[in-house]
Length: 226
Length: 101
Image 1 (tube, helix red, strand yellow):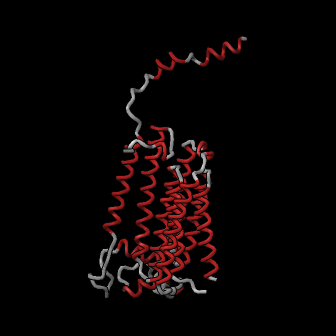
Image 2 (cartoon, each protein chain N blue to C red):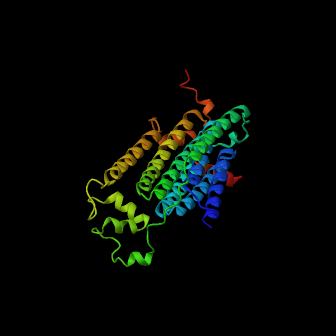
């Protein structure tokens, strides 16, 4: 059952990825990429990374791809759909990519296969048997039994080690999280600077418009008279 | 049939190779950018697979950061492409030879 779903998701993902590369229509490419991301979210669910599967669909398949589609439709790309293919260039890059894939396969063949460890998280009924779901003072072994969302939240935002855990083994990602927010701020300012139009003198609207085109009302009245 | 870590790594490697192929082959800047994004997602898949099979959550926290940074990066990159299109009226890489030596 698990193998069936694994191959379903991965083959779907790879076919969609190939469609992204080979499609001539950019909008169709973007839609195939969205499907590819959704299949990857399925693989994340199989790896019991439920939170990341949700984030993947919301952020990458939702926000990022909407942005891509918006830009593709904003720019007129229809002229590129009929551009001739360069077969030699295509063959060269194909050979390079296949060589890369062969290298990966060769390396993986030397590794011993590693089976999936049993899931550590417990069912919802068992978790609620602990009492409160958000608790500062639960021990590390209890955290390990929680689901992945709880554990990621714990890693991102915990400021002190759990009882029974030492400071040496304690890792918190509060600082990287805050630095990421700074990065997003910088990106926002950068986008505003990039997209700002160069300062042309703005036209004096009332005068220029009246000089360029006659008022519409006179046209209409003239049209009504005749 | 048991699914092992190697299967996940092979699938991620295939996705990365397809992204590499797209970056090398296509001449439309937007599709190249999409292929780059695909390579990033392949790295995400390896992170999550290693995180699950080693039973350690740090990989998933990293993927969380990668997704965030990738979203910001896409916004900046698309703004660059739009600025370029305003200047040159094209998104083909062959027409952008300003920096050619």
